[in-house]
Length: 313
Image 1: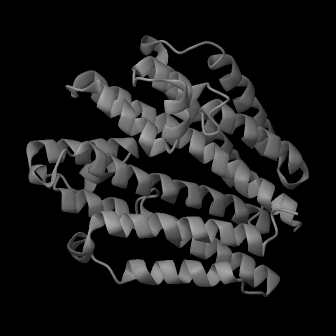
Image 2 (image 1 turned 180 degrees about the vertical axis):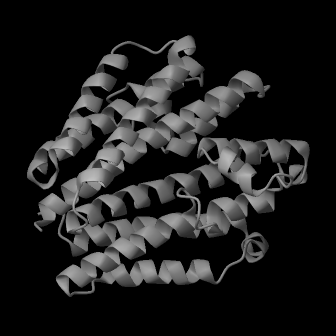
């Protein structure tokens, strides 16, 4: 497969995943700011920080309000990570790799772009926000469903899976880090009622609340929640699950091409590091340090994949 095609598939699904993650993040921020937070501006600030677009936001606005944050994250084309920007770039990449996609996948992407462009034409009112965010999630799910149901399990499929897993791993890690260490006022609050609320916020930010409660009906402790989001390979947004998917699909590509690249060594090292940890050792060594290392490693792996498979040039 040409590097340009592989890169187009990889980034198409990274952008789709990013748009969905942004919608989930806005939903969690909206819920907490509306129902539980005594300082909604801080909650919206944490949402912008988690999304990794605080510099761009601060250059445009001097306060953190629901209207400004929601508009910036959903509709602002100057924000390269806004939902509309991501949907635009996903469709552009889909057009570039049109011959590598099934008709169903292309139609799902194109229909999603048209529908969301119409939905996001005007600023979204508070009363309409839940339904708009649900629409974003549904459309990205439709594209993934078409992809899973119609595409061959070949190298094209593998690059889509790697893109999704890398973006999802990065998002979950950033939510754990920023939500916990930005929202928790000081170390003295660890184990307090406020601490527990922050962890529940984290679960809702990655749509993990229901899954977690199925497995842990009585224990909502920070250790249990962190263990679920980091090490539980059954949950599709956990760090362990995502890194396993990356390793697995890179392995398929290595087998197809009968060639092992440097990126394979990097993901194997990341997987080995995760297997060496329990949630106890992670907390003992420092959750923030562990998450920071994971985000750095994931970024390096992504860049190495682009280099190894010549996405550019």
